Length: 140
Image (tube, rainbow, N blue to C red; front, side):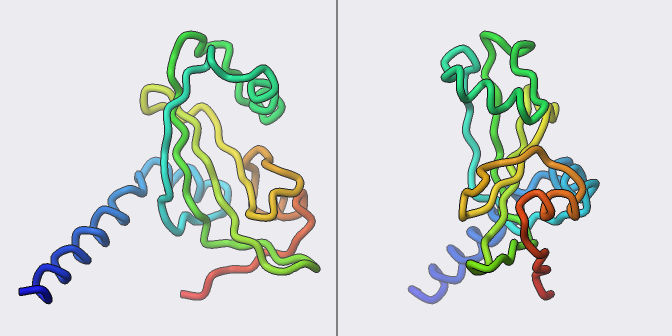
């Protein structure tokens, strides 16, 4: 009985993980030459409640939030299959899709080291060049 319950639970977890990668997000990220590995969360945030510094960060990445005043925007976070290798080691990379009413309004890339923080999504080679690291592809 426990084996059946464990198998059913594992099956549900696997289905929910794969289901959480939205096709339009996958296609959007792939248009920049990168691939989503897995979903790791999402959250809603009201634009008016954001700190001015946070709004400025988005503006610097080309995401204009003024059009979404008094609205809640959705941030969807994914790990990428690519990782970033530099002299300090290999770092996991992530992408965050920013959207309103299921329309993508922008995206940004980050890596677990956090330096230089996050950058606007761009073609893969440019992203890794700006982070100052070598592209490490996940083996299939």
